[in-house]
Amino acid sequence: NQGIRLLAIDLGASSGRVMLGSYRDGKVTVEEIHRFPNGPVEVNGHLHWDVQRLLEEIKQGIAAAAAKYGPLRSLSVDTWGVDYGLLDEQGGLLYAPHHYRDQRTADFASVLEAALPPAEQFKLTGNQSSPINTVYQLFADLMAKPELRTTARQLLLMPDLFNYMLSGVAVAEQTIWSTSGLLNPQSTAPAAEVLRRLELPVTLVPRLVPAGTVLGELRPALQEELGSGPLQIIAGASHDTASAVASIPYCGFDSNCADASCVGPGSADPSNADLSSPDPSSAGPDRPAGLSPTLPSAAFISCGTWSLVGLETAEPVLCDAARARGFTNESGFGGTNRLLKNITGLWLLQETQRCWAEAGEPLSHQEAAELAGQLDRSKACIAMLDPNDPLFSTPGDMPLRIESYCIRTGQPVPQTRAEIIRSILESLARSYADTIRELEALTGRPVRRIHMVGGGIQNKLLCQLTADATGKEVIAGPVEASAIGNLLVQLTALGAVDPAEVRRVAARSCSTLRYQPSFSHQN
Ligand code: LFR
Image (cartoon, rainbow, N blue to C red):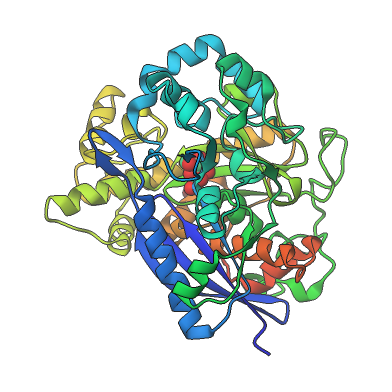
């Protein structure tokens, strides 16, 4: 019994991967088939994504998987949020999609905000206003190039665009559209008032579908070229964060999980498993109305280029306090809501390492973490950075920017590489801790544990510093969270896994590491 074989195409802002998933005996196992770099490409002073190359990499991965394993059942693409391609009347791409760090929105942000202030954007969409959001980008594009009003027929967000290139079917999948600033958070339809006020054509928005919608077979020409057989293309939880959160093995650690067999490998030792104490989110007069008793008592941090720190809630949280503190609402698999903050994450470290590599002194991720871990904190210079300071948002000389940030904020400047890296990691951990305190205050739900997922958790120092800064237990895993969540949602669409079982399958499928706060470091 080989089980079901399927592919997750997981595209991040700095790398992409084609992962083969095998579902057998109630468990998913994953194998990396193909990994490739991704990043902004500068053309005439603007930042774009090289969609054609990414498609070629995806095709290479499909062909390699088919050559190794024969026919596959299905495939789904997930990517970062907010970016899009515009299709012309013939269904071709008008131009290479822009990268969200491109600065063309800067000229038009104030015009947009005069027509639709950030507070109203939040009320109407649940999204925190940000110049990277689709709404800002589209507004800027239509202002700068009014001819797009006639030439552009459809707007496809990145995962929808790749799923379209593979299947020929164009849709607007809900989880990815919930990052756009163009969707009504309660009715899951386009936010008509936003479109009207900004004079954005509603006809650009394709048919909205929920996560887990089968689109159809891989285009016949591609089946032949890649030797893959007639695999189904599925619109999964197409936003990488939605997929990552779908993979969290909450139930391996929650007291309200009745299935003893679901306990994940990380809690195989029963003395580790948190099976005795009641779940504080499940009852009590302090729990705000509308929050489901089955919601996890744990927060999540999805760690990659960005750090997404949040809590799953039953309903969008649209109060002024949430907006004022920088939170956003996004949709998850099964109609859940994520109340989260978008923190500039390992981007700070990635850009720092890129600079050092360009200067001829490269440092691997592993070396970077080891170096910073060896520091004696009491003797070193550790500066606290605000990762979301606009100074850090665009590509550039990050060590120099860190220096000018420290001078501006009256802090001593970290001198050694170890001090710079440690300052970045401590600052991230501090901002995670601040955000989790805000989440507790906003929802009235005490956070008992933190699930950290995604590639960034391979940095063990970051996980430990997070436990220390929050004073809470951290459960780290899975690393390949977006790919696993992507596969799980596909399995529900194929009818192989009941949506209610997703967390249990996740718990059986992934390995986790636990970090306890070391109290000498706790705030
Ligand atoms: C993470 C992510 C975030 C989104 C950012 C930019 O990969 O998808 O959720 O805000 O990328 O699109």
